Length: 242
Image (cartoon, helix red, strand yellow):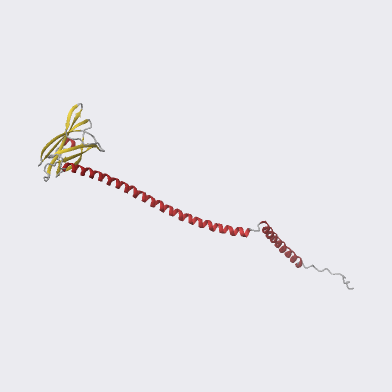
């Protein structure tokens, strides 16, 4: 006896359509998220694109301004250096002009002195020490300036040597510092002179620290004759013969 044929048959359901629907739903969900983000961004910042454009433009402007500032600073440094050079040159020029003015004043004084010396109304004198003056120097030395003159024989040249000694007080006693001691040499040569009308002689001597000068005794020895004159000691100004 054969088995009866069942009226119903169990057929397995296909899982593929359900998976496809799930994938479609997932894609739609993602698209909805993107749409929501775009909609929120456009509503929250509708001018975001323009703001970014303005930001880029501002950055370019700032960069340009920085370059211009660097160029301006460089020009300023150049101008400052040029100004420093100009100021230094101006100071040097002013110092040079001051020296020239001082030189001109000295030359004018020499010319006036020469005019008085050779003028028609000037008293004729032979070889003569017109003046001698002293001024202190650094290191303890003294600078002397002696002016020699003669207008008795206008065509003659006076030649010879000058020496002097300084008289004063040393250790409470009268003392005289001779030419050799003034120059701190055993055989110090005299100061040569050679002139027609006048000549200025300058040099430096050393006085003892415990010595107080009072007078200067000057000797001239040469072809114009021998001259001895005494002067009072005066610092920084000429002293006439006594």
